Structure formats: C-alpha cells, structure tokens
Image (cartoon, rainbow, N blue to C red; front, side, top):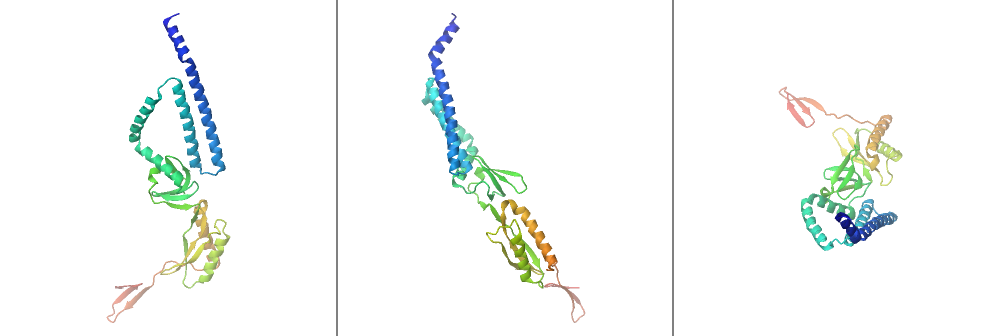
Length: 282
C-alpha cells in the first residue's frame, strides 16, 4: 500500500465520521430552518401582521437556525469556534465601515417596518416624489407613480423627512366659475346632484361644495369630493365633464374672463382709456 493510500485511509478513519456527522447536522439544520420559517409565516398570517414584518421575521429565524447548525457542524469537524468568532467580529467592523450607506438603509428599513408611518397600499408623498406604496423592504421602499412608473427610494431618504400620507383615499380639488347673474342655488344643487350620482365619489366622508371665491367676472364654486386613490385621475375629468354638460343643459352661465374698458374725455378734450382701475391718457 502506497503512502498516499495510507494517508487517505488514516484521514477517513480519523475524520470520516466527523464529516458525516457535520453533513447530517447541516442537512438537519436546513430542514429545521425551513420548517421554522414556514411555521412563523403561517403564524404571522393568522395574526394579520404586515407583510414586511412577516418577511423579516421569517428570514431572521431561518438564518439563525441555519447559523446555529453551521456552528455545530464546524465544531463537530474540530474547527476552533472562538478564534473564528473573533475573526468574524473584526471583519464585521471593517465591513460596517465600508458599507455605512447600506447599513443606514437597513436601520431605516427596520425603523419603517416597526414604526409603520405608512403601509403597503397607501398613497404617500415624501422626498419630492409621490405614489402608491407597493413594497417596503429592508433597503428600499417602492412607490407606483400615477403615470405607472415605479419610484424606488432608499430607506435612509425616508426616515427623518416630512411625510404626507394620504392613506387609501384622496380629496379632489376642482372648481367651476358661474356668472354673477346665474342662479347660485341651482348651480350648487346641480353640482351636489352630480357628485351624489357619481360611482367613484365616496359618500363618507361627504363631498364639500360651496362658494370659494368672488372673482372679477365669475363666482368660483369649489368642488371637493373624496375618491379612492385608484380613481383619483379618472374621477376628476369625469366630474368636470359632467358639470360642463349639466350647466349647458340648464343654461347656467360659465363666463369667459372679461374686463370693462371705457374711454373718458376731460375738459381739455384729452381722451383717457380706463381699464378696470387703471386710467391711461391717449
């Protein structure tokens, strides 16, 4: 028998059972981690926990279970654990200094997940962008913009900023002008009738309708109904069209902008042009 065969036989005799035991521990650890993750996911689903928190908890439990199995497997093979843990700690410090941005995103992500300033499905405005929240992860938060594009925001850009959370409904800010000679009560009743019969307008909270401003040539009526976030874009154009059609049908005047112009003659025969409050010599 050659020296190589003897060394191989000696290695297998000395470490074979250790290696087999380590493999068994790793396989058992992987199965245990998967089972614990599945049980945790089912438990959080029954408790109706937010998806980001559920995803984070499942991942942490799986990593911890498999990490414990890995440590036991290395110990079974005779690898000294204490120096390895110390080396990992030193390496972790260096990696942490080199990846401060990544770590800040993770910390911010955990802050968002646990403090819940917004949830998936809500419409928010922050850091100069706005959209429907579609996912909240450890590193980034993704918004769906009204033009159907996706906005990915690093979590560190969210924490500490002023957040405008619209929730799941938004209030339209529309207006229409009517002439000073028009029937104001009829115009208000027409607008309220349109809103009460519109499928996208929510009944609760109730729409706000009233006189917003007395302009130079028209009375401005404010139209502020509440709609779901998904109906925000379509509802505005539909209500404007309905108001225009009903006002035309009921002959409620929507005046054009106008300005009164008068020509005045003084005692010297000089003409002056009066436009509103301004007077100019001709």
